[in-house]
Amino acid sequence: MKITIFGTGYVGLVQGACMADLGHDVLCIDIDKEKIKKLNKGEVPFYEPGLSELIKRNTKQGRLQFSLNAIEGINFSPIIFIAVGTPQSPNGQADLSAVFKVAEVIGQNMKEYKIIVDKSTVPPLTAQKVRKTIEKINKEIKFSIVSNPEFLREGSAVKDFLMPDRIVIGIEKDDKKAKKIMLKIYDALARTDKPIMFTDTTTSETIKYAANAMLASKISFVNELSHYAEKTGANIKEIARGIGLDDRIGPRFLQAGCGYGGACFPKDVQALIYEMNQNNLDCEIMNAIENVNKRQKKSIIKKINQIFPDLKNKTIGIWGLSFKPNTDDIREAPSKIIIDDLLKQGAKVKAFDPEAIKNAQKEIKNIKYCQNAYEVAENIDLLILVTEWNVFKEIDMEKVKNSMKQANLIDCRNVYNPQEIRELGFNYLSIGRP
Image (cartoon, rainbow, N blue to C red; front, side, top):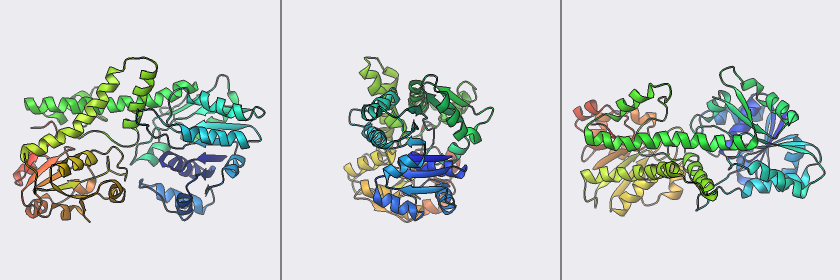
């Protein structure tokens, strides 16, 4: 099938490349001239494992194309995915201006029936607003509106698309034509235990927000509990395993650390809080999730000050800048909060990340960026592991210790075995473990 996708950001590009790899003919549209130029050369604007190979293979075989021409995209296919950004406004509200701009362009230029699919993460009732936006411009042509939220994790997005837990598709009442075509698009991914789930559009939109809020709540729950574990001498990793073995809870996201970040959880939790407030509803749990996450990021500074009450003239090493491994995304990353506080307290900072340095350099100034993990460790007073990249798990920690001025280590992701790391001579602090 022919498919058009508006937006070549994280969601649109993964969607386009994976759809092309399933055999569909895909045309991706964007307004960013430099990005489209790079994509046509096979260059990917962000790091995501496996994505570059998919793009190169499918552009070479002619199934994946990139263009600046919106009208070309509208005429290319009867199925148009809107996968543009919905950034967070200062008050927490999702900024839907790009979504409605695409809807206007579609309304102005479509000449025959279209299925218009909201792929961007949007608040409930957005599909209805998209319909009204188009109908205001074009009352002649019939079209369908579909909500099809993405459930991609940065760092494993290609795998998540090709092997999904579920595919959620929201359609308007009795729209059998749209349902049939959406089934045809995703049929290759459907499995008995990984269903295609059909709902109305508003339910589909709410599922996306609710899923991210639930996952964020698990992270905030175990992070809050980690402080109690530290006070009592309990081990948060064993606590998490013990409750995670309950099938009703599960082990995923029960990992204590320095807080969640990225493009989804912070934005979607805050957008859900905004939407509930707009409807005059109490949202104490959502506010608590958000507040616990903010406190968790700040709690690392307390651990640092346990070791050094005065940070002036101290040199601190940071391992990991991205909000999690296998991505170059630093949006809402705990590293930014930690580094900002270190600099305010007069410390000197050195940092390394396998993929995120270019993005970090745009936002984080006045620190030294290193070429590798060992360079960070040279002559520092304290090392902080912020992101659990494999390179930090497999490193020679004895060599690291010997190059440090003082062997202080804060493990914000509980990567290392406390007994083993202390036997090497480190003064070692982790999250929620004795």
